Length: 240
Image (tube, rainbow, N blue to C red):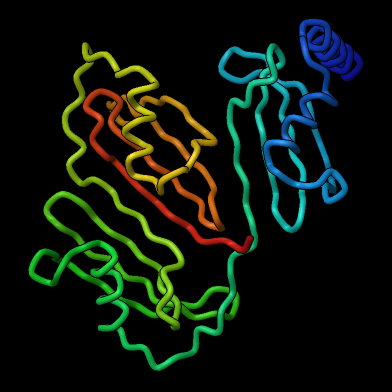
């Protein structure tokens, strides 16, 4: 039985290889070039042929300068279909005399809100890997906000989620990708390029979701694929 399974896997791998227009080495080179790292800095490179959403891809993973990179690359033309990277979080000395009220004030300033516009605010001091920070959460009529703020007053991460997702219209057609990208880019810093983009069907709604990484910050934006309304926005700070 095991021999039959191994033979089937071998035949699948051979079939995938025969239909691939670019080689594994080329896929790895595309990923490394896109990551903007030196080939000499790459360690623990791993790549494999796979199927994703009915399409043949190379799944390429590697580490460089303390960052883990994960790419899905088309075997047909070498296009980058998805991208993800994880880096070591920035560490600070979080011990400080900053109060909960000051942490809340920093979050409100970032959101462009004042106390009269929010409800159900919660501020708690937490600890992660020996480092302390403040978790700040509050709501408006339309959105919920969540912040992680260091004892030095630096915003480590924050997210916004739309509380009014709207009703799904099964007959509605999602907007085209170019329009969706235009809307998503309007929420990102000027000059940002989308690194990962996908359409999904989430809890009765068509959505577009994109992510990117710029200047030590990872961004994720999700919008309603029909109306273009913002569903969620998130920023996470990482070490460069």
